Image (cartoon, rainbow, N blue to C red):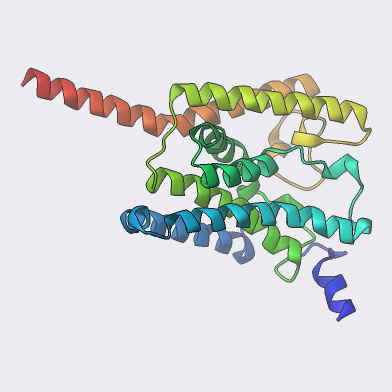
Length: 257
């Protein structure tokens, strides 16, 4: 039993996970199925007497998924390089925390931040989950990673479909300022802890990822990251902008008819 636990909660010595394989695409497919079901049954969920219970369970699950990452490291300190790598300074971690309190309290302000952070930052973690290179489907970290990241999207789209929340232009500003605040913390910690690379603003990742296409020059690299994030924020808001324009055009047409 001890050997099994050591294996299950540990990491491999050779790569066990590769992007765009079945182990990578299946969790994403299951996420789309979950989002479709949320949309399909949004009305029954909205009127269900168990709706509040569902939100509390979802919020609790999000916190457990996030905290279990640190519990694993506390139980197996040889897996960690300490604060150099494992302080809670990341878009994904904070998105999950925000999503948990968002669904419990039905908070529009937390929704504003979580929506843009997930669709503009955590999206890259789903596309290139390089942290799983040595943790395949037989490892705890594989399931913890996918549950933590996909449940965040379930929480955000639950609030969109069931509670009719949506972002506004003020939401964009709020999320952007919050992201810059977190980035400032990351820069400060990276400077304080030699070898730290929070938000990957100090250097490229050690494993292959989409960030490899960025220029090696540090100043140019940061400029490109800022431009890409800004573009992702714009794309995340674009559907709502087009929806508002269509609604206003329809209203003008009815008024002039």
